[in-house]
Length: 484
Ligand code: ARG
Image (tube, rainbow, N blue to C red; front, side, top):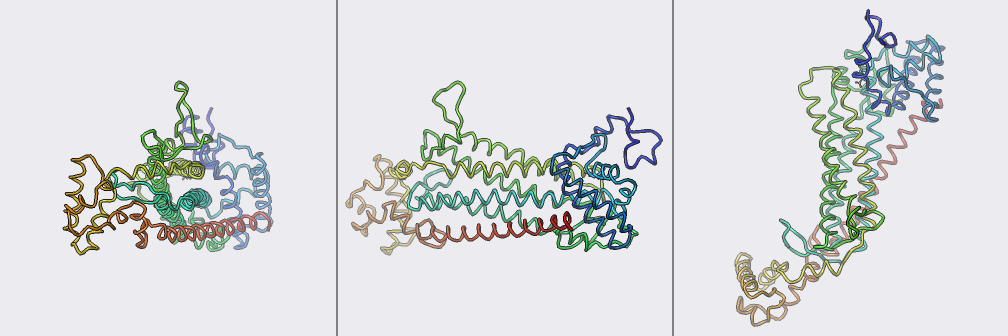
């Protein structure tokens, strides 16, 4: 059955749209998630139309009343969507007109779905991003807690997955925390760049009505209106940027997960994941699997896929609006959902992780993880570092040939490599001292790590405050639009 009779644009058409065309072009499945923002955008728009005397006050009031009622229906889960109407914008407008009559037809004066959808999506993303930042920050908080509780726990630090130098677990956890901090802040930076309101750009060229774009921008909590109407309806770099930020956060989580999966293995046994956040096997009764970490690592594929989808979908699009742009929502909505959920789950995994400190310490012994410290020791005796490096290299080779470690060498054996070695060498290469002496700014010593934790906690507090303020500003806008 043909259905274009119901479409808002059916006037020009002799024949109705085929059902398959409707199904193919509809975005309701995805954009119904923006229903609330669509109503808020319309409330702001109609208030502006009223104040600029573009729509008579009486009609505007009817529209406002109807939109508020729709917002209430949405809150109560009573707002019915009609799948024969292609998108959320059409659904809201048609519902409104059914409710209040012909006055509803005045809402779309001086705007188009093109500026409407860009505005709705920015408002949706603003909230979604704040939620993601909150989740990532929660993960950072969990890492900080593990760091605080494991200030003196020593484990091997790796480069190339080879024992490099001993580090504290606190330092290692904080490395992840700072990386996640940048991920969270990158999202907040993106919000700054998308803080301009496209509404009133209309189809592409602006409008002949004497609209006040600053007013709608203020009512919706944006800093300013966008400066160019074609750019406003034809650009989605704000979406792609968020898709990138989500990808970066997913990659950071994936890296943390990879380590936890290794550390949780029988070979490492550095950590054990809590029963509540592990799963079993249907066939092997002994299994306890780190599925949350594996799934988080795995879901990174989809999140990065969303970024690629955005890049390729928008590549070579001519200005201004093209229907291709309708494909922007699903990937990025989903990638933010994924990153947020993964961060919340990983936060629980981190905060309930059991740490096997004796196993971590044991792993530092028996090898040459303190070789650099032996070289540094020789430097304190006046040997140039390059020469010291060579001497220690010979000592390591000797140890390998004789199947012993540096700690097992006697003073006499040490002296064969350099006569400058004294009995203080033993404390110089003890792993605890190796760690404690790396007290340069940003180094692994417990004292340096305390500074890191303090800085990171300060960052988290600032971030939480930023999110709280932004949420409050947005909430104020909604309260005003719904109650004034
Ligand atoms: N559903 C559309 C989208 O998401 C809304 C804009 C439709 N505009 C148009 N010219 N057909 O992009």
